[in-house]
Image (cartoon, rainbow, N blue to C red):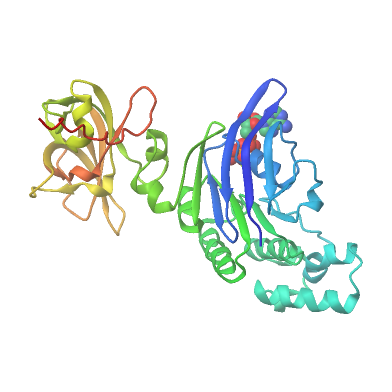
Length: 368
Ligand SMILES: Nc1ncnc2c1ncn2[C@@H]1O[C@H](COP(=O)(O)OP(=O)(O)OP(=O)(O)O)[C@@H](O)[C@H]1O
Ligand SMILES: [Mg+2]
């Protein structure tokens, strides 16, 4: 049981700052996923929580106690890495029980705890095997067991599934989620895989070049991305982006080829004549005409069949545009197809800052 407070945390290596002031509160029992591309500072942040990396500025606390100066072993965190580094000459049981042995826990207690742990991770029948006689997923479970047996306050995972093949990744992801449902231990999980992040997280922390761009539940982050970066990073295929100008009374934007796309006038009213960037998810567009929203025409070149759906690749207003639709007829090359885009599927971003443009409070005319 543990909560983690991260306040103004920065990290520099020499003169180069790689984490630029991170603030987040992780609540007891929560499963938080840190998501971002390679080099954005995910591991650095995790390692600062674990105590494996010194904190340049700011404060990290666990259960209200500032841990900046505590040694890793005094923090009660267990870390599971991508390279789980099991002892090859020891059996599964010895690997799992190793930390208890080092701590001088008596043999009988140790055996009992190893058995309980093996039961939790489904490895009771493998206790006498050596790591070399296990599959990748089983080895990963031994690494989890080794972390669990210490009954840590906090689990820290650094891309623990990236060495596994695609099918096993999905399976282990479910096992980790199931284990968390059961144990409810506070967990921080680092990944650059957005599907892994979306499926595991109670809350997501989306990092971008050493900053946090957004913190929220998977549906908040998907539904209301705080920046163009988050919009483009979460979702597959990625969000479509178009440079547009806000027209008329702010109720629509004009795309490159002059077509009008309806937007929320509460947002557009303050932006008339300005250039903004709109983001539209491929799965929120439908083929054909419908009432409400807007119907625009785009030229399509080819279709990819995914089995469960189809991706139509084309161009709209001079930009590449993808539509995810169940419609199954492949387009003729360059075929013009009408598309329906609901108003609430249109996200607006500031082209300078990349931040989401939020609805401005409507200024009421003063009563006469
Ligand atoms: N010991 C170090 N000395 C100097 N720079 C470092 C050191 N460790 C990491 N960095 C730099 O800090 C930045 C963040 O690294 P970090 O390992 O946290 O990224 P990451 O998000 O975990 O990436 P990945 O997904 O590739 O693991 C990178 O630019 C990296 O080059
Ligand atoms: Mg890393």
